[in-house]
Length: 324
Image (cartoon, rainbow, N blue to C red):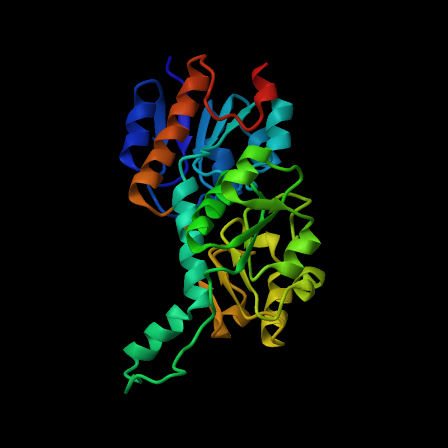
């Protein structure tokens, strides 16, 4: 008998086609999120799960699925999945790294430029019919070219962001647990520094670390106070990396020039203080929102799910120790 797979939310069609070759697919073709109770019910007889970062794949959900063998996440991040509980049960967890690197790096730069040059405010000014004439000080923003960019986290996306900085002639600092290979540092003209140094010296601070116990509120009151008053904070990683209440206070008090955020602590809720600030660019978590990228993410997750269920090794295991 074919294994049974639950697909928790709407995905691109290629993913369903891949799964149907090998599995019986229970497809919740909706944008609504299944809560823990409904997930537990639908997973009782499932061997596979294809999920998204809004799905609460908790220890209780995993425990309610005695036949579960694989959890395939349509995303790079997997903080919504209790990976420890899955590993303890021998359940493989997979994700979709690599494919969204360039799209997320592009969006990071879109946010950086939009914040520095006050583009949302300029567009609103024009649409409101307030533009009467060219003026020497109308909606002036901040320089980007030649400034210092601080990258927190130097994985695939952080490095792609650094590569784009070369075209702007920027000085690039990066903070990470381990230094990149010397040849890569030379190629990207990037300098490994402690986080405190990066915060003090950067004109733009861009976050690219995964969310975990060590990175939750990595940027809080103390870190924001170290940044230049002329600096901008950009976050396209995970919302809880930043203490949003502290960020709002810092912006209101003029401790930062601005911020640009694609992710939030309690998505889809946004701190009301952020919504009121004119020097903040806000997007609804669209870092990888390119049709070709999202479609490939769905297909990769489906392929890894099918691989595990047919006895093959998945390409992107999060907990490879389960595979032996």
